[in-house]
Image (cartoon, rainbow, N blue to C red):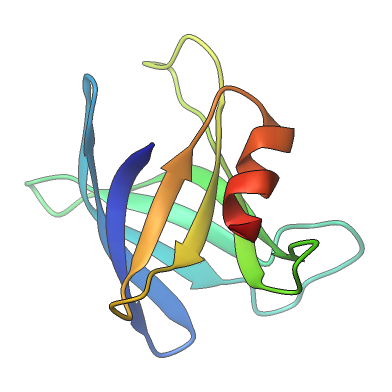
Length: 113
């Protein structure tokens, strides 16, 4: 299920989530400047209407079984009952969609489609 839409901005991505009770506009995927080991490739932040920034998750660069690149995304915060695992994938129209499924394996299968 598509839960958000994003566009590529330089080396990162910007967009919003607009599904369920979760509405985060001004989301940004910013590259981690000095990645080490298994640390994330991107930090995911949101922005309040007042201009404050808050961290909402992290993302790792992956490649699907079909050879397509995507970002494995983990979103979490105090208002979520559990972390949300999803995939940021390039769409046919050139935008990027944040795709959510119940489990990580389903996310990876969706990214491969």
